Length: 216
Image (cartoon, rainbow, N blue to C red):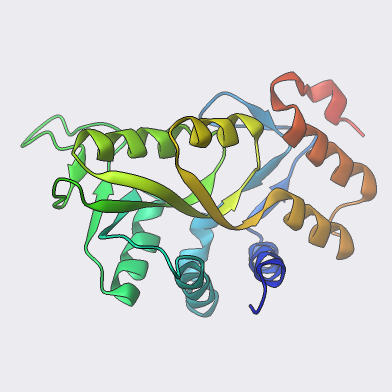
């Protein structure tokens, strides 16, 4: 992974190799945000492939070189294993952040210990609309931490997510992205040119994308 471009392509190839990415233009997926999409990326499958998992962990390590931080924060649940592997690799403290506080015990939203003014990097497996990541950023700030960066394996590159990160002054680092992934999928004939155009059109305007447009 000598260059950023090579890293993006290698990680995208891994996602395609393990069939983490599926395309369903005639029966779109519905994300938690309610957005309809012709594509779905399930990075959770990566945890079952030790060799590929290690490549991803090392890519995350490389992406964080030069960053000064005190704590790594995984977002429950998909970000937790990556945060744990990364924390072990870098010998850094780790916390994890729930989507909402527990309804029993201490009712914690954040598990683990974070001290005032500590610099925290949010770890996520995937960025779609960015809602869960921004909620985690805000949770850490409310607990007294400082968040300048969020790192993830993959992003759908939705403009709404990009704007959310800008609004909270948080830099988003990702190992690969939708554009790179569909380029490689097309090169391998996993998708045809029409499907490639359809997915990119969805990325550029997901709110107005309809099922009718997806029938090609």
